[in-house]
Image 1 (tube, rainbow, N blue to C red):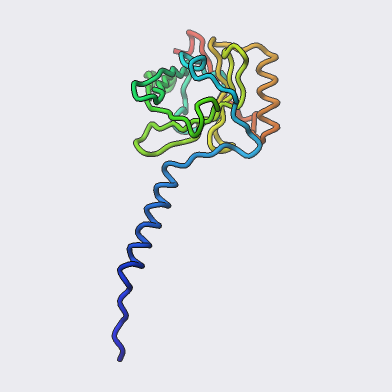
Image 2: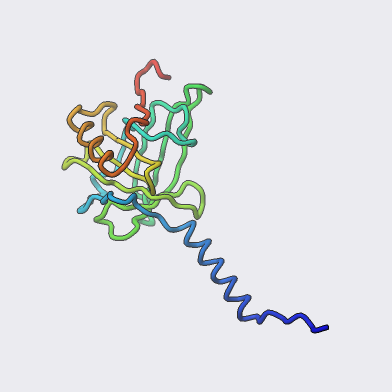
Length: 187
């Protein structure tokens, strides 16, 4: 009977490093949906401040929320503070989530990664914004995440239609959008 051969330590170390790199890549890598292009040039100073969510593709963290806002401000370390708030009309409670965003590459391109849970990042891609930074179309990592934002609780019809057409061209299911209620009755 032959003795079982021992796996060389170098091979085990290599497997450990590879597993670590795969884990690191999975928690720190972000993408942009195929066919989408981030705004460039992008002016983060103009983007900072309060935005109202006009519409979204629904997902578990925003389920049953109305009066949703996102406020962006600069942190001392250069990252961006992300303060999301919304009113859960089922539980009748305000919900708030604070995270941070960093640019994926150059700060003049609207590609960011945002984290609300430690080292886990998701894509935040500004794919359309008007010249005055009053209206924005944002895509996540894939076609499951999309938002239409405005500096006010409404958006002009022509901007909405342009953003919907762009989103459809990229492949988003715009018929599934949740249109956020910002009325006093929704609180």
